[in-house]
Length: 251
Ligand SMILES: Nc1ncnc2c1ncn2[C@@H]1O[C@H](COP(=O)(O)OP(=O)(O)OP(=O)(O)O)[C@@H](O)[C@H]1O
Image: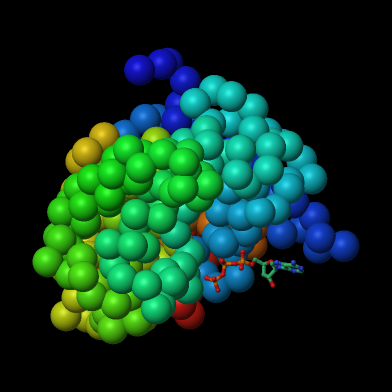
Protein backbone atom coordinates (compact mmCIF):
# COMPACT_ATOMS: atom_id res chain seq x y z
CA UNK A 1 0.00 0.00 0.00
CA UNK A 2 1.19 3.52 -0.78
CA UNK A 3 -0.22 6.88 0.16
CA UNK A 4 -0.66 7.72 -3.50
CA UNK A 5 -4.11 7.52 -5.03
CA UNK A 6 -4.45 4.58 -7.43
CA UNK A 7 -5.40 7.08 -10.12
CA UNK A 8 -5.03 10.82 -10.18
CA UNK A 9 -6.15 13.27 -12.84
CA UNK A 10 -4.86 16.80 -12.40
CA UNK A 11 -6.46 19.59 -14.42
CA UNK A 12 -6.90 17.51 -17.57
CA UNK A 13 -7.83 19.42 -20.71
CA UNK A 14 -8.21 18.16 -24.26
CA UNK A 15 -8.73 20.31 -27.33
CA UNK A 16 -9.37 18.83 -30.75
CA UNK A 17 -9.21 21.51 -33.41
CA UNK A 18 -11.13 24.42 -31.92
CA UNK A 19 -13.27 22.21 -29.70
CA UNK A 20 -12.61 21.77 -25.98
CA UNK A 21 -13.57 18.17 -25.36
CA UNK A 22 -12.32 18.06 -21.74
CA UNK A 23 -11.81 21.01 -19.41
CA UNK A 24 -10.02 21.18 -16.11
CA UNK A 25 -10.90 17.63 -15.00
CA UNK A 26 -9.34 16.76 -11.63
CA UNK A 27 -10.08 13.51 -9.81
CA UNK A 28 -8.29 11.48 -7.14
CA UNK A 29 -9.33 7.85 -6.84
CA UNK A 30 -7.95 6.10 -3.75
CA UNK A 31 -6.94 2.48 -3.99
CA UNK A 32 -9.92 0.11 -3.77
CA UNK A 33 -12.58 2.66 -4.64
CA UNK A 34 -15.28 2.15 -7.28
CA UNK A 35 -16.17 5.38 -9.08
CA UNK A 36 -19.14 5.51 -11.43
CA UNK A 37 -18.78 8.04 -14.26
CA UNK A 38 -22.07 9.35 -15.59
CA UNK A 39 -23.19 12.19 -17.82
CA UNK A 40 -25.38 12.91 -20.83
CA UNK A 41 -24.37 11.68 -24.29
CA UNK A 42 -21.34 13.54 -25.59
CA UNK A 43 -20.29 14.71 -22.10
CA UNK A 44 -16.74 13.38 -22.60
CA UNK A 45 -16.82 10.13 -20.61
CA UNK A 46 -15.27 7.91 -23.28
CA UNK A 47 -12.72 10.61 -24.10
CA UNK A 48 -11.77 10.73 -20.43
CA UNK A 49 -11.22 6.95 -20.45
CA UNK A 50 -9.12 7.38 -23.60
CA UNK A 51 -6.97 9.94 -21.81
CA UNK A 52 -6.55 7.66 -18.78
CA UNK A 53 -5.65 4.61 -20.87
CA UNK A 54 -3.35 6.51 -23.25
CA UNK A 55 -5.46 6.21 -26.39
CA UNK A 56 -5.75 10.03 -26.37
CA UNK A 57 -3.14 12.48 -25.10
CA UNK A 58 -4.42 15.42 -23.08
CA UNK A 59 -3.42 18.89 -24.21
CA UNK A 60 -3.27 20.00 -20.56
CA UNK A 61 -2.83 18.31 -17.22
CA UNK A 62 -1.31 15.21 -15.69
CA UNK A 63 -2.40 11.55 -15.39
CA UNK A 64 -0.84 9.56 -12.52
CA UNK A 65 -1.12 5.86 -11.77
CA UNK A 66 -0.06 4.98 -8.24
CA UNK A 67 1.73 8.32 -8.03
CA UNK A 68 3.66 7.77 -11.25
CA UNK A 69 3.22 10.36 -14.02
CA UNK A 70 2.08 8.39 -17.10
CA UNK A 71 0.76 11.36 -19.11
CA UNK A 72 3.09 10.73 -22.03
CA UNK A 73 3.30 6.93 -21.69
CA UNK A 74 1.78 4.81 -24.48
CA UNK A 75 -1.12 2.38 -23.90
CA UNK A 76 1.03 -0.74 -23.39
CA UNK A 77 3.22 0.94 -20.77
CA UNK A 78 0.14 1.95 -18.80
CA UNK A 79 -1.15 -1.61 -19.07
CA UNK A 80 2.20 -2.83 -17.73
CA UNK A 81 1.86 -0.29 -14.90
CA UNK A 82 -1.40 -1.98 -13.86
CA UNK A 83 -4.15 -0.36 -15.91
CA UNK A 84 -6.81 -2.58 -17.51
CA UNK A 85 -9.74 -1.58 -19.67
CA UNK A 86 -12.82 -3.09 -21.27
CA UNK A 87 -14.49 -1.51 -24.28
CA UNK A 88 -18.12 -1.01 -25.30
CA UNK A 89 -17.60 -3.49 -28.12
CA UNK A 90 -16.48 -7.06 -27.54
CA UNK A 91 -12.75 -7.72 -27.51
CA UNK A 92 -13.04 -11.53 -27.66
CA UNK A 93 -11.63 -13.68 -30.47
CA UNK A 94 -14.97 -15.14 -31.61
CA UNK A 95 -13.69 -18.42 -33.06
CA UNK A 96 -11.55 -19.30 -30.05
CA UNK A 97 -12.77 -21.02 -26.92
CA UNK A 98 -13.59 -19.14 -23.73
CA UNK A 99 -10.60 -20.56 -21.84
CA UNK A 100 -8.30 -19.85 -24.79
CA UNK A 101 -9.37 -16.20 -24.89
CA UNK A 102 -8.62 -15.74 -21.20
CA UNK A 103 -5.42 -17.78 -21.42
CA UNK A 104 -4.10 -15.52 -24.18
CA UNK A 105 -4.69 -12.50 -21.96
CA UNK A 106 -2.90 -14.21 -19.07
CA UNK A 107 -0.05 -15.24 -21.35
CA UNK A 108 0.36 -11.71 -22.69
CA UNK A 109 0.71 -10.52 -19.11
CA UNK A 110 3.07 -13.29 -18.05
CA UNK A 111 5.51 -12.88 -20.87
CA UNK A 112 4.19 -12.49 -24.38
CA UNK A 113 3.07 -14.84 -27.13
CA UNK A 114 6.61 -16.05 -27.95
CA UNK A 115 6.70 -17.85 -24.63
CA UNK A 116 4.15 -20.35 -26.01
CA UNK A 117 7.05 -22.02 -27.76
CA UNK A 118 9.83 -21.38 -25.30
CA UNK A 119 8.38 -21.91 -21.87
CA UNK A 120 5.72 -24.56 -21.38
CA UNK A 121 5.69 -23.85 -17.67
CA UNK A 122 4.54 -20.33 -18.37
CA UNK A 123 1.77 -21.73 -20.55
CA UNK A 124 0.67 -23.88 -17.62
CA UNK A 125 0.74 -20.84 -15.38
CA UNK A 126 -1.36 -18.91 -17.90
CA UNK A 127 -3.90 -21.72 -18.08
CA UNK A 128 -4.13 -21.93 -14.30
CA UNK A 129 -4.57 -18.19 -14.05
CA UNK A 130 -7.22 -18.23 -16.80
CA UNK A 131 -9.16 -20.96 -15.01
CA UNK A 132 -9.03 -19.03 -11.73
CA UNK A 133 -10.24 -15.86 -13.47
CA UNK A 134 -13.14 -17.73 -15.10
CA UNK A 135 -14.01 -19.19 -11.71
CA UNK A 136 -14.03 -15.68 -10.21
CA UNK A 137 -16.60 -14.41 -12.74
CA UNK A 138 -18.73 -17.56 -12.55
CA UNK A 139 -17.87 -18.75 -16.06
CA UNK A 140 -15.76 -21.84 -15.31
CA UNK A 141 -18.56 -24.08 -16.59
CA UNK A 142 -18.32 -22.37 -20.02
CA UNK A 143 -14.53 -22.77 -20.37
CA UNK A 144 -14.88 -25.11 -23.35
CA UNK A 145 -17.49 -23.07 -25.24
CA UNK A 146 -16.67 -21.08 -28.36
CA UNK A 147 -16.70 -17.35 -27.64
CA UNK A 148 -19.06 -16.59 -30.55
CA UNK A 149 -21.74 -18.77 -28.95
CA UNK A 150 -21.93 -16.75 -25.74
CA UNK A 151 -24.77 -14.42 -24.77
CA UNK A 152 -23.86 -10.73 -24.34
CA UNK A 153 -23.81 -10.97 -20.56
CA UNK A 154 -21.53 -14.00 -20.71
CA UNK A 155 -19.17 -12.21 -23.10
CA UNK A 156 -18.89 -9.32 -20.68
CA UNK A 157 -18.03 -11.73 -17.86
CA UNK A 158 -15.33 -13.37 -19.98
CA UNK A 159 -13.92 -9.94 -20.86
CA UNK A 160 -13.73 -9.17 -17.16
CA UNK A 161 -12.02 -12.54 -16.61
CA UNK A 162 -9.46 -11.49 -19.25
CA UNK A 163 -8.82 -8.33 -17.25
CA UNK A 164 -8.49 -10.26 -14.00
CA UNK A 165 -5.96 -12.59 -15.65
CA UNK A 166 -3.82 -9.54 -16.37
CA UNK A 167 -3.86 -8.53 -12.69
CA UNK A 168 -4.62 -4.84 -13.11
CA UNK A 169 -4.68 -2.55 -10.09
CA UNK A 170 -6.93 -0.02 -11.82
CA UNK A 171 -9.77 -1.17 -14.07
CA UNK A 172 -11.75 0.97 -16.50
CA UNK A 173 -15.11 -0.52 -17.45
CA UNK A 174 -16.70 1.24 -20.43
CA UNK A 175 -20.46 0.65 -20.33
CA UNK A 176 -20.30 -2.95 -19.10
CA UNK A 177 -24.08 -3.30 -19.37
CA UNK A 178 -24.28 -2.15 -23.01
CA UNK A 179 -26.14 -4.75 -25.05
CA UNK A 180 -26.75 -6.94 -22.00
CA UNK A 181 -30.33 -8.17 -21.60
CA UNK A 182 -32.09 -6.94 -18.46
CA UNK A 183 -32.30 -10.50 -17.11
CA UNK A 184 -28.49 -10.69 -17.10
CA UNK A 185 -27.86 -7.29 -15.49
CA UNK A 186 -28.07 -8.46 -11.83
CA UNK A 187 -25.52 -11.29 -12.32
CA UNK A 188 -23.08 -9.01 -14.15
CA UNK A 189 -23.55 -6.38 -11.44
CA UNK A 190 -22.51 -8.99 -8.86
CA UNK A 191 -19.39 -9.83 -10.88
CA UNK A 192 -18.39 -6.15 -10.83
CA UNK A 193 -19.17 -5.93 -7.12
CA UNK A 194 -16.90 -8.92 -6.48
CA UNK A 195 -14.18 -7.36 -8.62
CA UNK A 196 -14.34 -4.29 -6.43
CA UNK A 197 -14.55 -6.27 -3.18
CA UNK A 198 -11.36 -8.04 -4.18
CA UNK A 199 -9.61 -4.71 -3.53
CA UNK A 200 -9.32 -3.50 -7.12
CA UNK A 201 -9.83 0.13 -8.05
CA UNK A 202 -12.59 0.50 -10.63
CA UNK A 203 -13.83 3.36 -12.80
CA UNK A 204 -17.04 2.54 -14.60
CA UNK A 205 -18.86 4.51 -17.28
CA UNK A 206 -22.42 3.29 -17.28
CA UNK A 207 -25.76 4.68 -18.46
CA UNK A 208 -27.69 2.15 -16.37
CA UNK A 209 -28.26 4.36 -13.33
CA UNK A 210 -29.49 1.63 -10.98
CA UNK A 211 -26.23 -0.21 -11.56
CA UNK A 212 -24.08 2.88 -10.95
CA UNK A 213 -25.98 3.94 -7.85
CA UNK A 214 -25.94 0.40 -6.47
CA UNK A 215 -22.22 -0.20 -6.99
CA UNK A 216 -20.35 3.08 -6.76
CA UNK A 217 -18.62 4.46 -3.67
CA UNK A 218 -18.61 7.80 -5.45
CA UNK A 219 -20.16 9.09 -8.64
CA UNK A 220 -18.41 11.53 -10.99
CA UNK A 221 -20.79 13.54 -13.14
CA UNK A 222 -19.54 14.89 -16.47
CA UNK A 223 -21.21 17.57 -18.53
CA UNK A 224 -19.81 19.40 -21.57
CA UNK A 225 -16.34 18.02 -20.85
CA UNK A 226 -16.25 19.17 -17.23
CA UNK A 227 -16.70 17.37 -13.93
CA UNK A 228 -19.84 18.84 -12.41
CA UNK A 229 -19.71 16.85 -9.19
CA UNK A 230 -17.90 13.98 -7.52
CA UNK A 231 -19.73 12.70 -4.48
CA UNK A 232 -21.60 9.81 -2.91
CA UNK A 233 -24.47 8.45 -5.03
CA UNK A 234 -27.02 9.98 -2.65
CA UNK A 235 -25.40 13.43 -2.67
CA UNK A 236 -25.01 13.43 -6.44
CA UNK A 237 -28.66 12.54 -7.00
CA UNK A 238 -29.71 15.34 -4.64
CA UNK A 239 -27.41 17.90 -6.30
CA UNK A 240 -29.49 20.58 -8.09
CA UNK A 241 -26.69 21.33 -10.60
CA UNK A 242 -26.60 17.67 -11.57
CA UNK A 243 -30.36 17.56 -11.86
CA UNK A 244 -30.42 20.56 -14.19
CA UNK A 245 -27.62 19.11 -16.32
CA UNK A 246 -29.81 16.08 -16.83
CA UNK A 247 -32.97 18.07 -17.55
CA UNK A 248 -34.56 16.45 -20.54
CA UNK A 249 -32.39 13.35 -20.07
CA UNK A 250 -33.63 10.26 -18.31
CA UNK A 251 -31.71 9.79 -15.04
N1 LIG B 1 -11.68 12.75 -32.26
C1 LIG B 1 -12.64 13.64 -32.07
N2 LIG B 1 -12.76 14.73 -32.86
C2 LIG B 1 -13.72 15.65 -32.65
N3 LIG B 1 -14.63 15.57 -31.68
C3 LIG B 1 -14.58 14.51 -30.87
C4 LIG B 1 -13.59 13.50 -31.01
N4 LIG B 1 -13.78 12.55 -30.04
C5 LIG B 1 -14.85 12.98 -29.34
N5 LIG B 1 -15.33 14.14 -29.83
C6 LIG B 1 -16.48 14.91 -29.31
O1 LIG B 1 -16.25 15.06 -27.92
C7 LIG B 1 -17.47 15.00 -27.20
C8 LIG B 1 -17.36 13.93 -26.12
O2 LIG B 1 -17.43 12.63 -26.72
P1 LIG B 1 -17.39 11.29 -25.85
O3 LIG B 1 -17.55 10.16 -26.80
O4 LIG B 1 -16.21 11.31 -24.98
O5 LIG B 1 -18.70 11.46 -24.98
P2 LIG B 1 -19.42 10.40 -24.04
O6 LIG B 1 -19.76 11.11 -22.79
O7 LIG B 1 -18.60 9.16 -23.94
O8 LIG B 1 -20.75 10.10 -24.87
P3 LIG B 1 -21.66 8.76 -24.95
O9 LIG B 1 -22.34 8.65 -23.64
O10 LIG B 1 -22.61 9.08 -26.07
O11 LIG B 1 -20.74 7.61 -25.27
C9 LIG B 1 -18.55 14.73 -28.23
O12 LIG B 1 -19.16 15.98 -28.53
C10 LIG B 1 -17.80 14.17 -29.40
O13 LIG B 1 -18.47 14.49 -30.61
